[in-house]
Image 1 (cartoon, helix red, strand yellow):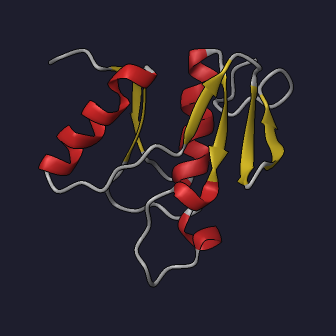
Image 2 (cartoon, rainbow, N blue to C red):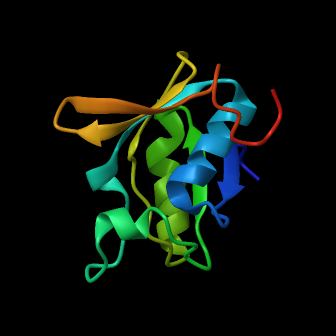
Length: 116
């Protein structure tokens, strides 16, 4: 309603990382994600969590100015949310933490959604 998000996609079968890749590719941008900041239940391993279909979840992008308000709105509805990275113009998805990031998708070569 407030037009705070620039893009949003429900987490589907490819899990949070695959869904994020689909959103970035469709938006013609890339991303740099700190995997340790991805919200998850305490008793689930991070590597397993990013590959599962959680039943409910969304990937959302917004301007830096709107990010905290987006989080507040989601949390008001009982949805865990956090800033996990940033959108970049380079058409790649990087994952990592502590200043060590590796490219996992190159959208100039990898066609996540199946369209070249």
